[in-house]
Length: 390
Image (cartoon, rainbow, N blue to C red; front, side, top):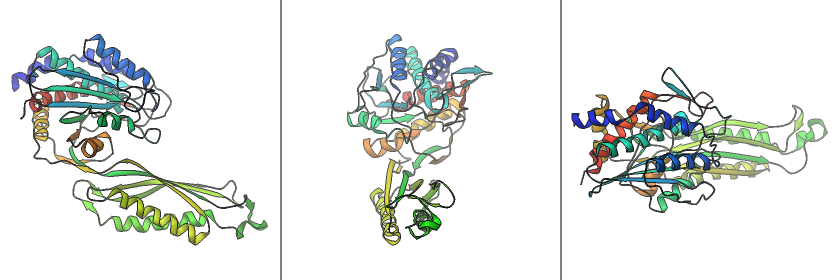
């Protein structure tokens, strides 16, 4: 495979790949408004005569992009999947300095998608994909809380899936075979009546802040219990509160208090059980304090785990070793992404692996162009190895 690695590495063009990334980054695409950048990807692919489909996948405002490169011979299909929407921060246009690409979405994950496109180019130009096919899918509605993941869900439900999938999120090490599930928690505590000064009856009103304090305490007690549920790679289950808001002024009894946080769980925990546990706490506190409590349990993705004995894992490890000279350690994915859904919804193995990029979800995203080249080579080699497996 040394000759294959050398030929693919020579086919991957630094300037072409970087130009593709720039062309994607220069199109603003906050979640729910990614139509223009999906159109840009469509243009890039069609200009190079790759096939392109545009299924709405439940989101006609920004139809997804689907492209295939077929070897013409029987074999497995390796999917490259990524989102082109970005978090809702002020737009930062692309610029390149000293081999680093800066700009909105360059690390999360337009640079990674550009690497996927370059991998497809290299495979086609070398003819080294001798079996099976590569499937590229790109979509909107990824970033929470603005998106809900339903765009990629729609692609999966409509059958736009391979036999395995690579996702170029900004995780270069380790090789993640397990990931926790995640739900975003939003709690709204209210009481009847109007805001009132504490000495004019406010102190006699049901306290939304007191109720919130008990919710936080109950959550902390549950988090202590959840420490007992742990995994040597993925860590422990948790319940975290990161935001509390209430009141207009220090001596006025408010009518509303809100808090927000996260609930994370491991494979083996039933998602509905975690939600029921959460809602039971809220119901008990509401009754005790005489307030109304609304709780949202916004599931991002369920927990997942893949079998390390699968041919896909071996093919990816082999490709990474050929491209870099290093074998990745087996580990966990610290965040939640669409790979969780491919495992749980589509039933196919998913590996998140992308550039060692910086600044995701900030105004200071950056990725080294050399890292995009590396990812393109790893992806192309994985396709050569995996698609020929029986």
